[in-house]
Length: 337
Image 1 (cartoon, helix red, strand yellow):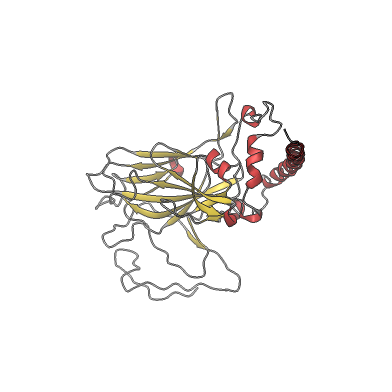
Image 2: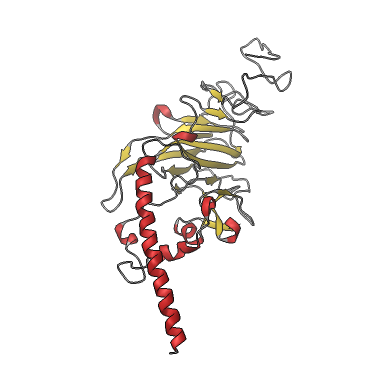
């Protein structure tokens, strides 16, 4: 073995030891920050909240030399996405159902059971997408829930459930964006979703909707109840069930829902099912479509954020038949509060 080769190996070993020491110092800082985050500090980027996955002590000890002198994850994370790009939302490329992903290093994306779809952070990271369907569990932020066989129409007859777990304790709400959503219509007489329905949550706090709802969104407050787990697992909040109930006659159905978990700083105000943050937009009732029927039991608030530089809101019907209240069909032209 040549002298130069030995010198090269020694040089690499010294660098790895220094990196290992620096990484330990960074972990101490992150631990202090987590304690502050849980007390309600506003987060700059909601997608970075909950990036780290709970692992057991066995997983933490995994490394090249048994006890983890140079853990594999640390070595791989030498090639992490730089700066603020790490954990940011990114646009996937290639064939992907998800419309957005999270910029991570390749190892972390694989470890969290995501799928790399293109590059980000100037080629040092991958755009990691998370997609689930019936029977799966949501354990990552910015996850897309799709109907079986999407984008093909689905003619199945069984219910389709997923369970949503908070990625961190600081998560308050779940934002659901209806990218695509077509299931059975409500009862023609009562307006109730007594056949096909999407049911988010359980008990008195659940939200139920059916029909056509492309482009809609909602905010749902996640439960803080704790649940018992196996002795080797860390304690955590109870999961929230999202169910697509199939009861109607055979018909094609399709859905693609974007699920984003929100910390307090990015949550909607109390008791607001919908939260509009842009300067302009359109407020529609659920199942507002050409052949849509009004849904009964939908008593909720659609709130508008007070943006900087604006002092009032002007409401205008989209057309002469787009705003009706009551059996008389009263129409409203313009409303300036």
